[in-house]
Image 1 (cartoon, rainbow, N blue to C red):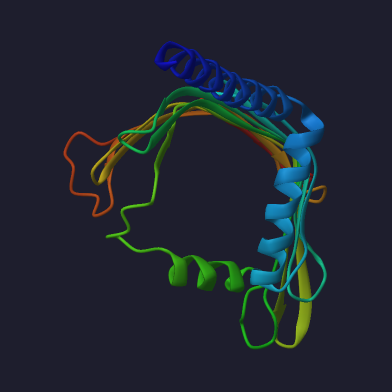
Image 2: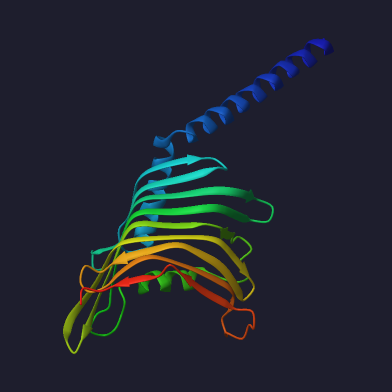
Length: 242
């Protein structure tokens, strides 16, 4: 009698463990699909839109766990329902993901097909100030749930940055296009920073065209007191139409 009870108990335990494993496997496989990932991220962006009182959307998501994150058509409006940021493709390659230390090391981040539109009104208020206000409210230096993120290489390609402002009650516009920025070897060490600009080019379609700027910035401190600081420009060409 006791043997039968033990056997039935073991069968139930094995069945229960099997159901859990199947559920976990099904959940894992489901999250491997772009459709499920996109659905989850859309729920997050809808909540974020309500919090920020503006539109935030991502059309498609493709996540290779612990390896790569791809976001398609990232869109953020300002609170005047105008485009603040649009990114065709945001690609982040993950080098190290440490849950214990709550840190993410990214080998590279690429922003492709980018449009930024920054503006200030007659009261000198910027259209992105609501984002800064939100970050200040939610960030805390003693927050144990926060994660630390580092990035070694950064690419900013097919980008356009517009800036509109008022000068003596006249609205002015600066429109910089064809921006390509390739930065590598980014190192942050306390109050010092090191990085290399492998390529920077841009064009304002009026008077200024920058072609193939290369620069090296080493041990630059916020107070500019470092004796070892170095800013080196290579192959700089600036062209104007005049």
